[in-house]
Image (tube, rainbow over all chains, first blue to last red):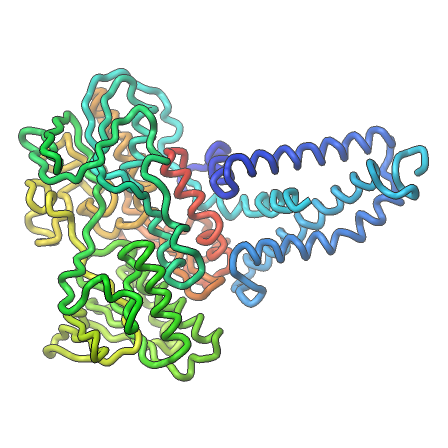
Length: 122
Length: 434
């Protein structure tokens, strides 16, 4: 491996998903992150009520992420062939879990149930 | 929501893809002014990637790319098509999708190259003069060299030939899937000549064997791999690993067996062996024909005279890919007369080297990039597993991730690279961005 630039990596991702879908996903990711930060700043603290449901959603996100990758690639748990595969599997699960938690927390804060939505009712 | 998960999954794969994204000479983005006439023969992986890089480096050059074929083929995908994992369309795109707007495409076949008068003649009677020539037409699959075989047989009577293109790869899967259902003897071959992607015949064998196991039919089948060589792969340490895997998977290798002819009606294949011709019965036969340079190369003054006689690979310096007798001629890709090197991964590493030496030569300097023979082969051993084998001219393993992704282990991560990231990296390469 000689050299890896950020530009090359972006080019590869554009090719994986198509330029439109890739940048749409980047935009969605940025929007959700900004919304999350907005909620944090607006509420001035982490709401543990909202965080509970977010936490509960984490295993769901983890499983969905792993199944998504396996489904995309014609593979299964039987194909785990070495330590690095376990690390990759856990990495995918972790990213899915965190992504789901942030998403659920943010959605709850913005449009969620009366129990958890917004700081007035929270 | 799904989009976000997709994105996150993609981010997780970032580490994986990074190994397939290395690139040389990306830092050299300064362009020079020139009115040089450059002709590139071939708009495949090598010609297209080089054209895209050259237009960024050369201001005012006239670049002509000559290729009669309207379709661009992502050839690394053919093994997946031939195992029913991807449709034929997976490997097909338009040649013009990838070419920069400021090169002229001539959609004619090349019939002659005169390296002395510096002209390329095309089938329409035109003659194209050049100052610099890049020869990248790929190679010719010599199906006629197998007696009794013709491409229209592929897909029927248990005959497969995945190299021949997307349609034939799909038909290969028809024949192979019938074999998986019905059982019998599977006979997998490779040619005695240099060939593109020497791992592909092995991958096909492994994939069909794996699918047979998963279909529960393995006990009714015998697998035989017939190699004209004395080993299963050109790199000894990889050959030994494959030999061990064949042992585990009950695939029997036979050595010094070169496919000579087939009798499709009787389902018999005849091989040239050290002890005379030998006939073998099959229920499924995978044909990989001898391979050579296109006729116009063989008829020109460009091939090696004393090496690979009759195959016609260009006589180039293995480090720079510059012709040893005609310094204004370069070869890239399958047609280059260098050991190994007939893969898309080789092309990816060759193109920046040729770009460097060509641009430097136009500028009156010496180039500095060196091609060390790097190539890689995600050697698929099962649906879901592969070995990421990378090596150089000296048969050294040159892993991109030493200590993390072991080259001789069957890993899911290596499969993920082949399945998800490889085509993307390939496409980025075509655009000159990887």
